[in-house]
Length: 332
Image (cartoon, rainbow, N blue to C red):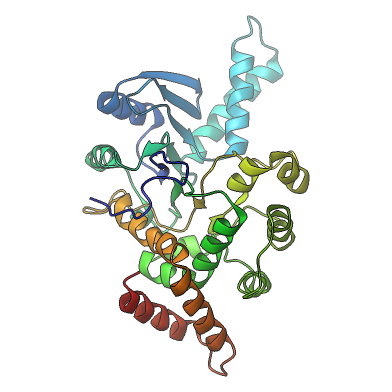
């Protein structure tokens, strides 16, 4: 059983967690049948790249080819195929599009997006992970080209600026330690999707007097991070809080699904490895939450960080060692 300190939100309801598994070697329709056999529901083929399993006992699962351009091509082809008569150009587009969809499966991951699941009911996901493993789904370490990730979307305990800043400060100090303990695959380090935060932003946020209101927090975040490609992506949460402001800053074309969660993108998805589960990755994330909720320890580690950064020998490996010692000493 996963030990979650803040199982309920500040408003009193049980917090939820959404999961996004990236994987390969198991077709979308077969994945949908697995989910249906486990949790019930009806399979809905939106197009060749996007399916949904609706009405399950947990909610709606989305199963898709995780590539927006391919998804858009699939949507266009489906519209053409519904026509009673197609032009020669349209017939060619459908055939060419089918080839692109098939080829794209060799380098683009499939993705299961779970519904938000109450944190008291997370054991249900073990059934899904076991089924995927039994049907030979491949994860991050199955191939050098599989830069697959597991995304965790934990509902926030509190969506105030003060609470978000505390979690952000906690994460920025723990990130090098998290990278080491998640054992991030080399292929994923080469991608831009889990880029670390800029040093200037880290320095800005870890100031002792950094206490922005929500508008300032959003402005600062966008100024230093005009991209979603961060290991902890705050845009869905900030968009949930102030959609108009965030969409004005990032532009209407930026795909942002607003929700009251952190979007944690750092872990590998080792779905093909025996004994692996999202639980071990979640337990590492919970160190971030535990530190954020302990103001005394948070301040102590921030002081330690400032001392480390001012040193002539501020090697990241040394900081990882200090974090390890701090976590053990204070039982974070």
